[in-house]
Amino acid sequence: MRARAMPLDIEENMTERLDRMLREGVIDVAIPALPYEAPGIETVPVYDEDFMLVVPAKHP
Image 1: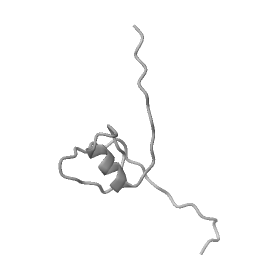
Image 2: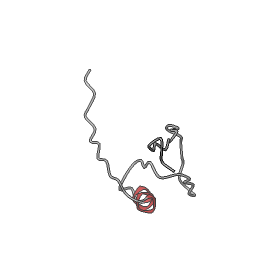
Image 3: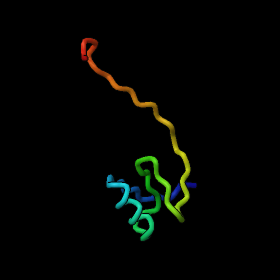
Image 4: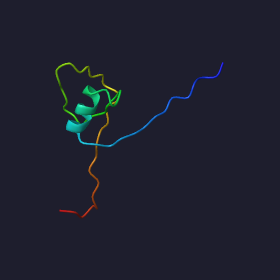
């Protein structure tokens, strides 16, 4: 059995705009900047990523 194709549109936007689009049903899922908590919105952690700063060895 072959799975049906599902369209995937990716939009990069500000968290405030993504929140509005989510509430209006324009999008189904958002990955906002953290921290993000909003009434009526369920959040589920997807991944945890460590960030590193990389500079030349002699950088002050």
